[in-house]
Length: 125
Image (cartoon, rainbow, N blue to C red; front, top):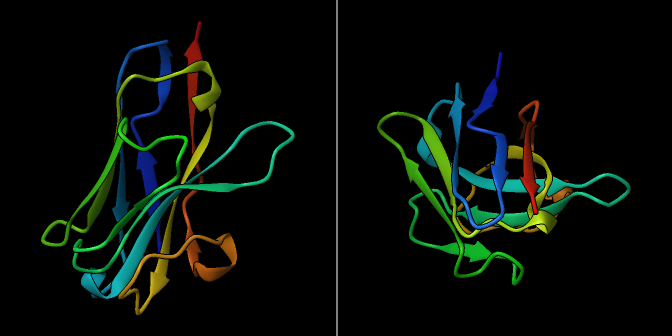
């Protein structure tokens, strides 16, 4: 059974940092493109960052560029999202997602095959 398990969410003040991690039971993990999506109340799910199977290609939404960093560890089947200089508008449920044969990066939720359960990130002003 495929599992993606997120951790690291929580409550932080504006300007603070959080690091999200996603542990994946995918095999082989290195063949999957990975993404971090977020969904705020009343809004559509949107990509925050994405990374190709080797980690050689990354994408960031304009709203997080320069503040967030996505990385992956193919030896340990994990993908992380370092979030710095957090803003109240970053408040959302954050989801880890995986796409088979992920040689590039993928921006639409429809392009992903597996999802985690989500972790709440709340940034107070």
